[in-house]
Image 1 (tube, rainbow, N blue to C red):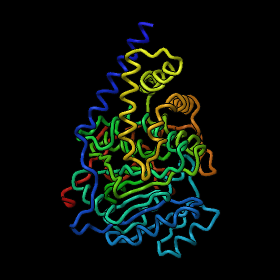
Image 2: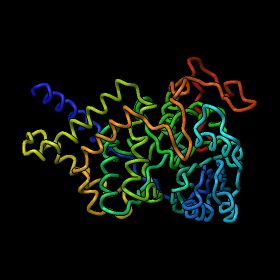
Image 3: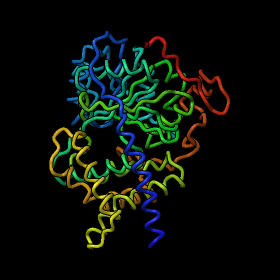
Image 4: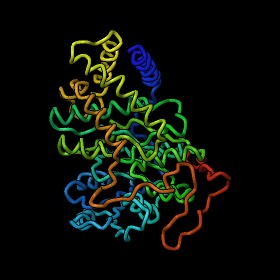
Length: 396
């Protein structure tokens, strides 16, 4: 019992240090008045006819956006027809090469087809507001890679409670969004639903080819490029971006839980430590409270978790009672996190992917396996598998 108490106290201290970073968070992204450079928006899409319409309508109406490219990743529905009809440029995706995850392959093709100096990538379920792309382009004056944290659209108390409980596990492991000081490269975070970078720099770095086998491709990309010397920013864009990720509580459990553990970008020791932190600081206090035997430390941790639940209300477009009730589901979130760590899911959008291969070794240069691309790529100027960071002088 004393050992468990000591471990829980150590985990609580780690969480307190991470949460304290929220006191110096960077301000949220906001529209800018300066004319942006030429911006291309790239949207990878596979069977997205039912939900891509609002995303396309929004970006096509944004005066800061020069072109909108939809990469149709072998869809079997009317995704391409809908996108073309709304006015987007449709790139018909080539067959998926061996060793690639579909999203990275689609993004690679879209970036190569883009004509803008700046590329903004969006998922089909994103709902951007006017000014988002311009704000991201302006942020590239300070960063080499920017990803944006949205507000989430969640319907129903149960769906919102489970989603908020999952979201809390990320905050407890990595701290709040928008830290003023960038974390170490091996702890960098990003959100692949919305990213921005300079097109030529990403092509030179072969970024998506180097994370081609990852399901947690956004975090893998951020960590590899941060190790190369890129300045990576993960910024709050809740006022400019909404995301409607899931249509049910079961969807939250199945789809977000699939990638929540970040197993393919985290070493075993760090995975074990992250799991211990979640079980000791979120699940254990709730379980002890349910049995009527909470300790003083448990009660303190529950108070902190309730404060976080209040803060997380701002992460939802229409926060309801589910966010405040989310601590009650923390044992379930810890269980799902453990399950995803021990038995990772490798299927997505009707495709089943093999276990991660050499491409999952973060920081290592991997060979681009596209037809006709067997060299490591331009921009390789250092040893040890690192690429030079891009020059931001033009953006400033």
